[in-house]
Image (cartoon, rainbow, N blue to C red; front, side):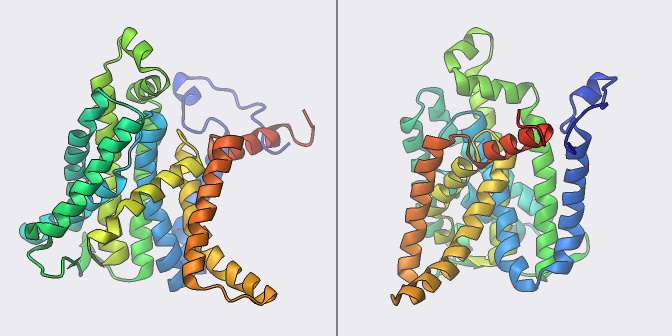
Length: 358
């Protein structure tokens, strides 16, 4: 009853093709963004902002990039962790080797170099697809892990292989508190999510979806598979590279190549599958689920063990986390392949008819 578009008439093509055609959606998104910028920093403490909200925002941005490639273009990738690593190390080297390099440009340069690497490792997509392409992108993961671990230039010849950053500033704004880091990541996420939403609704976004659905038919109607696939790799790698820079600079502060291992690639892929392939909203749902679930299991499993008199170790909780992830992926692929985003869409459709059953 409250979620209907009765009387909301459109008088122009621009109004008819806007991102949120229903007024309730527009007001809800604006209220959510305002609450995220104003309410969350006031209500949550520093631990919640540092340990939960900031990782959630950065991983949502990375999942957004993965969803463009896997969900919208249908190109399976297991090299997302490598693209994050390229973004982090490229931003680090850009900042320390160019005097006076602003932090914002350093992060964007990390995305640029990740784009170049993504296009290079996306070339096999012109000839192979499916599991063969997944193996090709997996080679990117192994190669980047080896390069950042063995080539001393990337780590500024640090014997330990780790790098660190400090004194983060953007336009005179010193970023040193959890609130500052949260607001910086939130700003990046809002901008990139808006750009991604418009991009997938444009001509290039429709080309990606045509390649995903049937690449032969897409080529027959005039879509260039090389341009569509490599552009998807480029856009996806850029977003993932920027998220990698934020993960290293803002969240970790000091990191080593193990921070962007193959586990990170699988984690991002799990986010997209659980959240919903081919859905911008699904990237947020998947990231929230992946970030919150380990915290929930760390609290819930020891409590259950205490009730039944069994001591559950931290290692057992970690193993249970992987088992739950695997079970959920199988369940979503069988019951609801479109993930949590599809359940959200069904709920919205029900609200449009409520309180009537049909």
